[in-house]
Amino acid sequence: MKAVIFDLDGTLVDSVQAIADIGNALMTELALAPLSVTEARSYIGNGAARFVERALAARGISGDAALLAERVERFEELYAQAPGGANPPFPGVEAALHALKARGIRLGLCTNKPGAPTHNLVAALGWSDLFDVVVTGDTLNTRKPDPAPLAYAAKVLALSPEDPAFAYVGDSEVDAETAVAAKARFFLFTEGYRKSPVTALPHEAAFSDFADLEALLNG
Ligand SMILES: O=C(O)COP(=O)(O)O
Ligand SMILES: [Mg+2]
Image 1 (cartoon, rainbow, N blue to C red):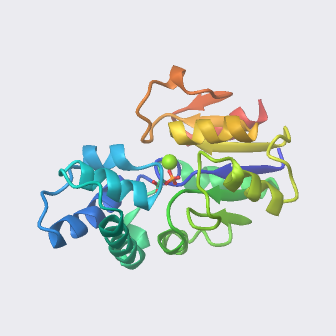
Image 2: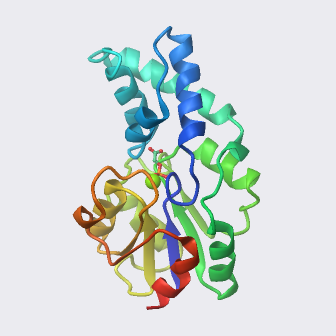
């Protein structure tokens, strides 16, 4: 294995509470009923704009593109100000990342989360030196499940996403679809924010404990 690229929300970090809190700061400003954590979890996966669009639609607000753009802008402002340290890594993540890095495997992130909160989070968790490439929801003008962000991450590492020595690790329908489109090997973390059963998502292998990842990647 030469490189492993990770999704972020629901894969490396259990960020749903932090994202719900930011969403609820917006909901409060708009005098709308707060999001439950379960609701917030179901809106994560396609980036900030889709999160806000889904949250507002659930409160009966939709159809005005200019108003939505304004709300998304405010959400992204709140998101950029939120403390990165409020996003706990899933158990075993730190050890798994360091073990892979110690073996000379290059690591990266490919997330639909916007750049500012991603970089805040990475810095707050002390992960800045771990990743050779970080692709966020606003790095390109397209997001997962478009394969372009994953292909871009591979390219930065001088690899092709189809290379058998390249792997992608994620938690959701969006990640599985991205990997299929990019023809990349896909490893599914089952404890994140997916909505469908594990069997419904195309994957090479699934795991629920990061302690098992290194062996899976080798196998
Ligand atoms: O921000 C989102 O909606 C999802 O982020 P992820 O791509 O890291 O899961
Ligand atoms: Mg995810």
